[in-house]
Amino acid sequence: MRYRIAIAAVISLLGAPALADTIAVIGTGDVGGALGPKFAAQGHTIVYGSRDPERNKVKELVANTGEGASATTPADAAAQADIVVLAVPGLMVEEITRSLGDLSGKIIIDPTNPLERRMNRLEHAVDTSNAEIIQAAAPGAYVVKAFNTLN
Figure 1 (tube, rainbow, N blue to C red):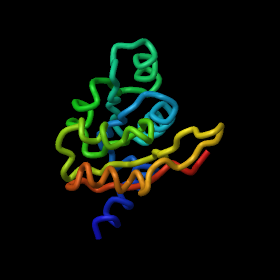
Figure 2: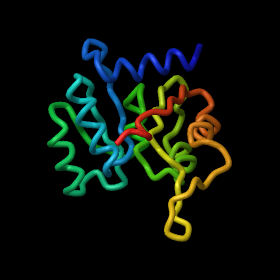
Figure 3: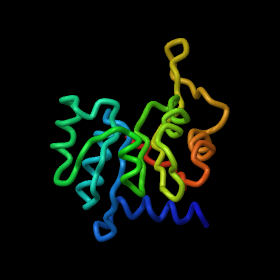
Figure 4: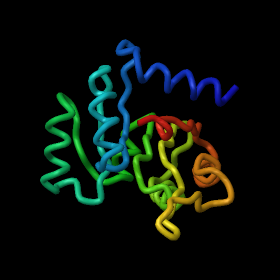
């Protein structure tokens, strides 16, 4: 049941501006920079979580995202939102998730892949999935795996 609610929430993010939410996008790299503006275009308010929210690249992303977008620290961004997107390096999800504070009741969208380069190849670097790692780090949250297999 819990997962059905979370999946319905992700689907609503993609096409139901009437259900607009505040979404914390933790990370301002390629994935965060692609997802944030798309969510904003659907009517959602975006708060980026960045290690350096005053950096020019982050300010440009906020400006390109649209009205109401802002940037702050990752923990502050997560605190402001009911939905958190972890657009971070896959091997850092546990540490980053724990650093965000209490995520109970929040939907966490996980677009990460736990990959590391070995002998010039990318290989899966954990024995489980990142969604399971995130769920263990935030047991009261609803974790949904999405956007990690689409180009």
